[in-house]
Length: 493
Image 1 (spheres, rainbow, N blue to C red):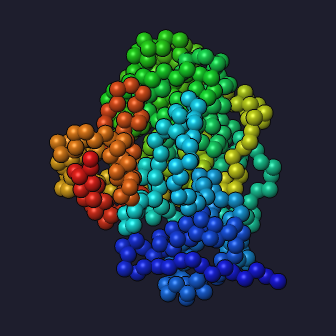
Image 2 (image 1 turned 120 degrees about the horizontal axis):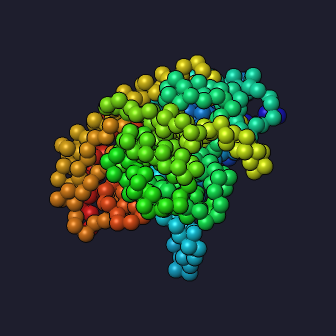
Image 3 (image 1 turned 180 degrees about the horizontal axis):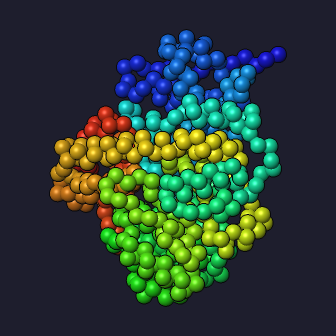
């Protein structure tokens, strides 16, 4: 006997400024994470669901397609939509917090655990009526072509390659990435040079273990994302922070701080978090350093696809003549966080040893979605999505700068950047003198507004400020979020 669909623990509020499809998507996601919709549960047909909720069937279809694309639901032609048996890797099941108990001891962490716990977190959901304001690393999900992606995923299930999982990634996806990089980023490479991975930290650990011995030195940017230094340290290396100026990391300064270093991890296109682009002089000096030291450069092309003013610099990889640059990119920030797919582009001399190391260490990232992503790139959907989101993010950045100037200029200064997906809010006169940026971020978080303290990215003397991601926030929601943010910061204690 076929399983009857479960009644949905969902209600919609037509008076809310949040679109109905977004309300339905978040309600279903919450029900899945809270186990009110168990894994494998069958959902009602979209027509019946729309009738029960009193909304258009298209509203239901859009919400379901988004959840299918993100991995919360599964659907096959001729079969019912069901809750995924395995939830996306970037999600943890949420449980209702237990009542606090005086007898509950605080966890005792190791020194390594304490460092991991101190990494700045990312809030992906904001308060009611303020969609994703101002979560870092969150793309504009409202601009993603879900219908196209759902169609490609369905095609993958029907006709996708049945070959055994390749630890290097799907051959079709590696070919598509090589073609995209040659046309869109000026990086000449072949499919054999491309390795599909599950993220930059996994890639860094593999490269560190392959290229350097325990105890050797690696250069990292200061300030910079703490996860980079932690990935290198976990591989037995000693990360040395190098202060970054307006022209990016200076090779001469790096050499004076760590004369024996043979690995550098840099974000030349758009430094994270300050937003500087590495100057051509510093790029050429860094390449010369790698040649002289027989060293390696890992180029994280962070936000390289998003530049709104001036001409973009060529990636280091495009300038590399000695085969010393390993290029790293990610699709999660361009498309969907739930994709969890990144890639390496290796110098030709590293292809064989990295392939051998992958065959020994594994495992390969999930093959599901790789064929669909390859088709998404080949059919021009990625290029079109980047064109649309460049315009969209430029408008959203302008809206954030204007809203800060009109509603919070006394408490924060927000200057535009030439690229990227976030801005920095720096304290001004009305910012309470005793309020640290970490405390300010916590205050905003309690009000449903996401911000990350800039000081958390510094190893040395901290620079106060708040990192505000704007890419996922519709223009109409930016002004009320900034107005509320100003009120909270002025009154914070």
